[in-house]
Length: 180
Image (tube, rainbow, N blue to C red; front, side, top):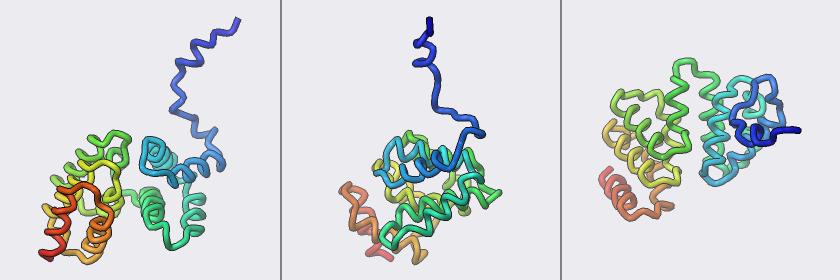
């Protein structure tokens, strides 16, 4: 008699690297089309962990995108930069894109406290984070690191202002933009 209970209790979140194929990688990349959600963050974390074997598919997906997919382009660039950049701490990057919003917000604060400017390209996509506290932490970190005067960052903050639904964050963005 087969004991199905052990199969149900099995932790299926880890797959052997040797079993990862192009289809799995393509499915993970396709999950990046979804709204920011647990599936999105789990797929992103998986692709970060896969690293080099996912590089060709990531580049192919990036090349296929039209101009209207700026968020997905920035996420694909985050993944590709992670593969190419040896100086980035993988654990901190995994925290930035963790499924738990408190871990994401704390990672932003850690980057701010340690003044790790090299993480800026990894931080900016989080302006689109679904959680208000992550966006709030990021905006305040950009202010505290004196980065809001940067034209690229200011442009991204202006774009966020048009989509922001949280009144407090919207007011903060308005005062930042009008004060620059």
